[in-house]
Amino acid sequence: MFWIGVLAVAVGLMISIALHEIGHLVPAKKFGVRVPQYFVGFGPTLWSRKRGETEYGVKAIPLGGFVRMVGMFPPARTVQSEDAVAEEKLRRRGLVGWAKNVTEEAREVSLEELEPGDENRAFYQLSTPKKLAVMFGGPFVNLVLSFILFAIVVSGIGFTVYTNSVASVSECVQASVEGECAPDAAASPSVEAGFEPGDVVVSWGGTAVEDWAGVSAAIQAGGTDPTEVVVERDGTQTTLTVTPTLIEREVRNEDGTTTVQEVPYVGIVSAIDHEPQPLSAVPAMVGEQLTATVGVVLTLPQRLVSIAQAVFGSGERDPNVIGVIGIGRVAGDLTEASADSGFTAQVANILVILASLNMALFVFNMIPLPPLDGGHIAGALFEGGRRQVARWRNRPNPGFADTAKLMPLTYAMVILFLGMGLLLAVADIFRPVVLT
Image 1 (cartoon, rainbow, N blue to C red):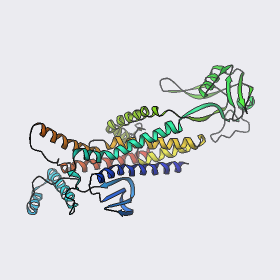
Image 2 (image 1 turned 135 degrees about the vertical axis):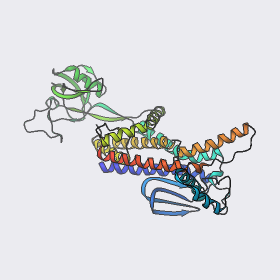
Image 3 (image 1 turned 135 degrees about the horizontal axis):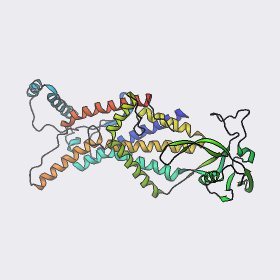
């Protein structure tokens, strides 16, 4: 069951990434931009096929995807001869010179992609609204997927509820971890009282109950006194007499701490059901998830510092930030842990993980830094805003924004993201998030 959960989330994540890239591909083609490649994954190509002018395929490393559009960067404002460019490169030294060289090389690669007939098919020539539609299309798909998946869980499957129906009866008071009873173990109060799986508790000690919370509260209130319990079995009500016993259990206090206390014990396990909610409940849940995800992203630097301290020191591991390995581990653990709750509960857990991942992809990609989609969106907004200000001031059109100048920042962010991924991978292996 562990590996089924891992595989299900891995496949779901790759589908989400593929749909994210389609969110870029469709508007780009709609607006006439030539798109030579659409790929899921990075590295060596495993499979590809060309349809029209676009090559579609899958690559070996399933950690993302890309849509390559021609003419991402506009040409330089002034055109220099090849000799002048070469001479300028020789004069450049140090970090500033490297940044200028990277910028110029990005422009050259962008212009080299343009073929005869592409004069009006470059990305940089799109209007600001069209650029925003192309770059926002990917994250928007993830937001929609998150909403749909949460809607399936909330309104299609429903929230998990513990009913007043008995799922199983414990044979003894203290069973082993595997659920086996020792030869000299005392029989549980539920066995002595005659409870059977499938019984529906109608009342406990004269108090009517409608759910497991009511059953649990009645057990705690009754203590260890003999108590009459009315159950419905095969359509007929039957009265049983149960005498709870005391066992030691960890009890969570109001301040979040836990203490070991003696509590009444019967030995019946509640049956789990799913209660669908109206669709009107979905937006609030999505809004809460969005707010929580934004909060995590805004505090990501200090969270990464905390994770580093946990990996290389004795700090606590932050459970809210995990990498690809951690996602797989959580998916497997949840699938394995919910095996007794049924297939529906396992599907719900997988869908919640995928919905949360799509929300994370949406929020993370909206960070206004290259190479993320938010960086391209910020560039388009800057270009459009500058043109609008020029119109208000009756000044000439300032032209396209020279986004190639952001390439040095792009390289720096790629290095930071790779470092973050490596740190999370180490943390997921040596200080994994453990489900409680």
